[in-house]
Length: 337
Image 1 (cartoon, one colour):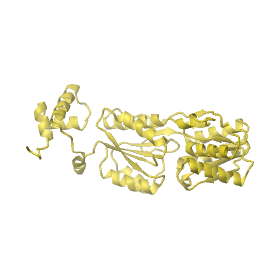
Image 2: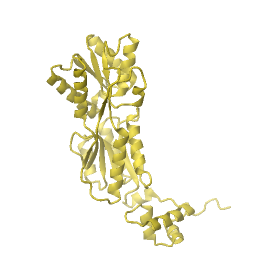
Image 3: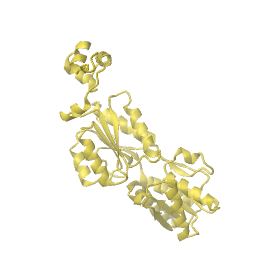
Image 4: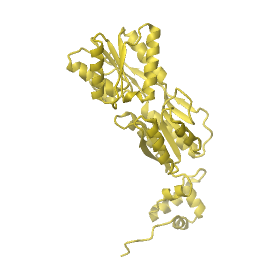
């Protein structure tokens, strides 16, 4: 028995399907303008022979691989997994595959991860947010594939952007709390506010509260990564500073969930003693009692749209007219306000 059978080559696929090597290569690279009959013939031959294209070899020749480099801050809650699911569904049916890197809300880490991922010659790049180091911007200025920045639309995109407005989100939170009668409002954040998007929301909320005549009383920005425990610690610190705070809004639902549990453990009535507002609209926060008031963000749709844009640009589709896709947010009023 031959323990080291010869691996099938593109030439073998071309011979079996009765087409040229160039035509077989175009099918395997998912190049545009290929007839359905040709594609089916070549793909069937590749399946029969067990042929797999060597993506790394292609990258070493300076050709783009079928990889889409995706860099997100964290996978510790359901925010970015939802986005990854959307991207994956958008790429389904193509030969494009996403590969993941994490920045931990650190611009220098994002830069280092991107530098490594670009050595694979990805077909496209998806990043979180619109703020990056100068070196990251320089690298991407020389990148020939599509670039999509997700989550935020408050700023100028490097190429394409898909997300929601942080300013709109912060303003909506402030108006809701004010309209519900709260006047001594505070804030809890995490990650040392390296998350620029949460910073934008806080600043927008502060500006709106100032305009309404109910300026933010105080804020606590935790240095640790976001989690329910950090949210609980943040609320504990806030109430030690000012026991008369009547509402708290949080950088996200993870923190708000911890804040709710802390208040309940301390015998505080939510929302009569203190109201709480989160951000993102995570499913778990709509399954507890009381349900969390929060801003629902279309995370899956953001990922799906980002993947669609990458796929369309790579396939040679018509030019994309709108570089920024501004998606809608929704205030979900629960029992915590």
